[in-house]
View 1: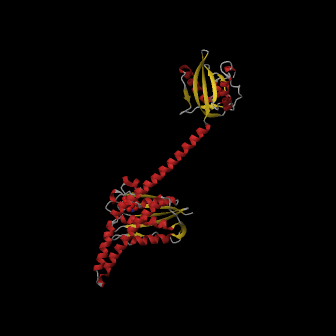
View 2: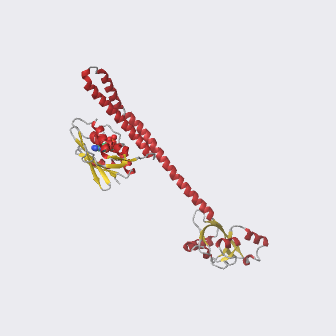
View 3: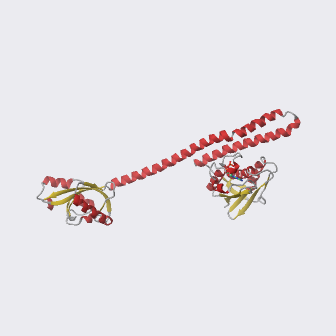
Amino acid sequence: MEFFKDKFSEVFETIFESVSEGIIVVNTNQKIATVNGAAAEMFGYEHNELVGLPLDTLIPKDYRKQHKGHVSKFMEHSDKRKMGKGRDLYGARKDGTSFPVEAGLNPFMVEGRRYVMAIVTDITDRKNYTENLERTVRERTSQLTEALEKEKDLNELKTKFLSLVSHEFKTPLSGILTSATLIGKYTETVQQQKREKHLRTIQNKVKYLNNIINDFLSIERLESGKVNYKFSSFPLSKVINEVIYDANTHLKEGQKILYPEQIDAIEIDFDEKILVLVLTNLVNNAVKYSPEHTEVAVKVIPRDKELDIAVIDQGIGIPNEEQKFIFNRYFRAANVLTNQGTGIGLNIVKSHLQNLGGSITFSSEEGKGSIFTITIPTP
Ligand code: ADP
């Protein structure tokens, strides 16, 4: 307190020493003229240790250059100013550690000499609090954005479902109605064949509608993360037979599905229902997108720790420029728009396979045919 001794009263000294902010008085040479106890303690020095030292002593090394410029400018213009607000300002303790501060700079004159009094506050707690708050806000915002995206996706799904239902359901439903009406008209015993034909039509269309609903439920479960996979051990031939048997009921004139060879001994460990869903989608597509009198072949290629199942058709194929979109939800290529479909099947198939450590690839040539190959792990 040497500096103020004969200039100010004891009252002032008491105030100077009892405020909780650190007070540092600097002369025009940027040397420390005096500090109060709070400032010395804040920077980790003894009370009088700082007097006469350059102000730089209290500034972290990395900030010194920048700081010197600021102070000289301030000395020239010397208006009151707050520092540290909105931009990072740090103090350096004697032990070399640094801490965030806010400083109010107040110039004043004593006996024709200019001084600056810096009132310094350690804002470590406030900064930590603000940083934590900012982090929490960022986390919450991203959670909310994600929830909103999910909500939007589910809403879009509902809207899509309604528009597809009104579109995709109408044709099969009116087909079912027609077949049912016609069955009622075939009363003669000899008309049994016709009755059976219409019954098959009804069964197929009901299955088709059921598949669409299952596909939508599948998306909904995949989206909301509610899929529960069930692994079990089963013979591959059981699933293949079931899928091909079902697909055989809606073949076109002269179409044939070829069974894979030598698969009786293959036992796999997978989610059986999902494998049925995947292969049903692929075989049904192969049949749907192939003309009459063509063959669809199912091939099984066991490999080390993996098994490939390929579905090969001689159908309309996928236009080159559209192949990259084929697994996008609701995507349907331009050459299939007269066929019924929703563009959901392959998207679900891919998601399920990915979730189960498998994968799907394809190659296709428009007008020649397609090969869809799935790979599943066989540990
Ligand atoms: P959907 O068959 O209901 O339209 P998918 O998701 O099963 O939906 O298939 C998406 C699109 O991929 C189909 O609309 C079609 O353009 C194309 N596609 C799938 N499989 C074949 C195939 N075997 N041959 C030709 N195009 C196919």
